[in-house]
Amino acid sequence: QVRLVESGGGSVQAGGSLRLSCVASAYTSRYTYCMAWFRQAPGKQREGVAVTTTDGTTKYADSVQGRFTISKDNAKNTLYLQMNSLKPEDTAMYYCAADTTYWGRDSLVDAKYNYWGQGTQVTVSS
Image 1 (cartoon, rainbow, N blue to C red):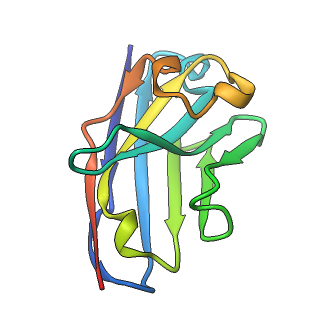
Image 2 (cartoon, one colour):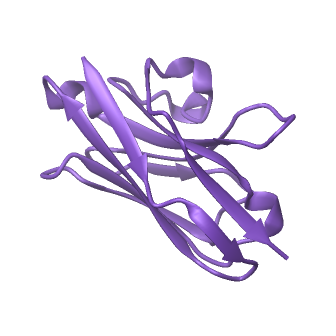
């Protein structure tokens, strides 16, 4: 019902920037009402990074607040993550996720999402 394809990952030095994109193909926009970015570093659990909804609600993990910006182009059904001031600890596989519901304080919990992309790798060197 929903296909998510991420792009924009790569290797960058600490302090640099990257912009991730996630194009969503869905039968209806209802399935992409809430879209989020998650990341998973080797040996660590997947963690929520940022989430946004079609009507503009946003939420960020404390670790990226002030450095990352999530945005969504509803007309293009595309989600973005602008990442500035990157740190080596931001190195991870980044995943796009989507669902029909915004779960408030649980919106950065991966179990709340039914639709996932394949991921794009971000590597930040010191």
